[in-house]
Image (spheres, rainbow, N blue to C red):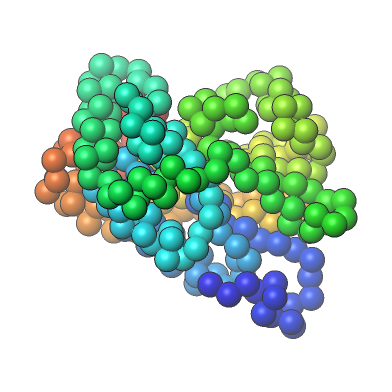
Length: 271
Ligand SMILES: [Fe+2]
C-alpha cells in the first residue's frame, strides 16, 4: 500500500490517519474484509496490528502470511507470545469451566498447526511500538501501541477501569496530554480521554465479544490540534469462518461465538 502522505501532493494537511487492527485470531475472512474496507477508503496513511493474530479459528498461517505480504507491523498479543514460547497456556482468563476447556483445545490446536515460519514471526513481534505521527524531530504527540497494558500483554484494560487505573498507565508510559495509548485484548472497543490522554481499545477483527458480530477496527486521526478515534465495524462472511471452524477439529462452539459476537451461552472467556 502506498503512503498517501508521500504520494498525494495535492492533499495539503498535517494529519496522519492510522488504521489499528487487533485480535484477528486467525479469522482470515474477517481480516480480508477489514483490509478491503481500509483499502477502499484510500485515506489511511498506515495500518498497524495490536496482536493476537492466532487462536480460535483455522487460519493462523494464512493470517500471518497476509500481514507479512501487506507489511503490516504491530505488537505481540498474549496468544502470539505464548504460542511462540511454547508456554503452558495462552494467558487468557476464563470465567467458567466450559470456556476454559474450549480455550485449552484452541490453544493446543493452534500450537499444533502453526508453521515454523509463523511461530518465528510471532516470536519476533515487539511488545510495544511507539509512533510519532508528526515526526520525532519536533515536539508532538506519541501514539503508544500495546496489546494489554504497559507491563503485560495479558492484562485486560476494560472500559470499566477507573480513571486511577488509566492514570497509572499514563505515568508508567510517560504519556502526556495529547498522546494516545492504544491496546486491544478485551475484544470490546471503547475510547476515553483522561487528563488529555486518549485511551483507545481497538476491539477485535476476528472475535468480537460485545454482541456485535461484525469485524472491528479503529481509525485514529492525529493532528497538531488533537486526536480523534472512530470505531468502525465491517460486515464479513461469518458463515465462511463458521464452516471452516466446523470442518476443523476446533470446538464447534467457536462458530456460534462468531455468529453472536460472543453473546452465546457460556461465552465468558477473555481472549
Ligand atoms: Fe485476543
